[in-house]
Length: 178
Image 1 (cartoon, helix red, strand yellow):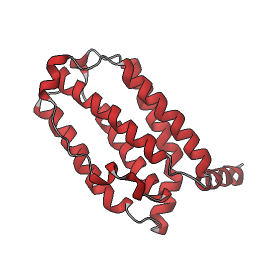
Image 2 (cartoon, rainbow, N blue to C red):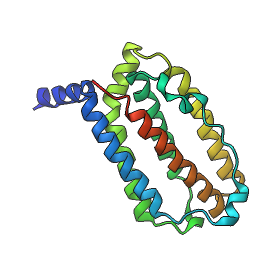
Image 3 (cartoon, rainbow, N blue to C red):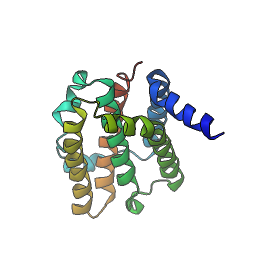
Image 4 (cartoon, rainbow, N blue to C red):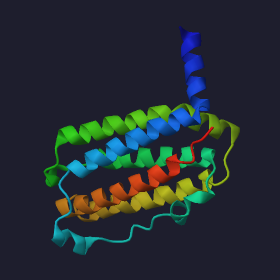
């Protein structure tokens, strides 16, 4: 049983096509869940700001599959962390947020074995440089929420930014090929 479990984890970590399929399905589900949350009221658009998406994300064609895994994993971790913050002012459904967190955790669970393998082998080119930029970007989002006392407009703006993130994630997922 243990050998089978180890083999299946290793096989999964080597099967980028399966990983790509799982990520695409899950990314789509996360987008659907986010879209079920109330959208941005018109007056909230006035408080939008540039959170400074890392340039590497805008030019993702430079990524190799190993870089994509590192970046996707970091993005999912950061989005998960943001969604565990106080969203009580939003009127959002706790059930939808819980479903979203479960979906995100599932994605991270699928990615973690290969992410660890990549980190051990140091088998990446840009991922290690992009991750600190991503951390800064997500810190900007968190600081924005804090500065606005987690109000509903701030959350609406962050929700819109997360929807944008899932577009980046879908693009990055395309690099997960055997």
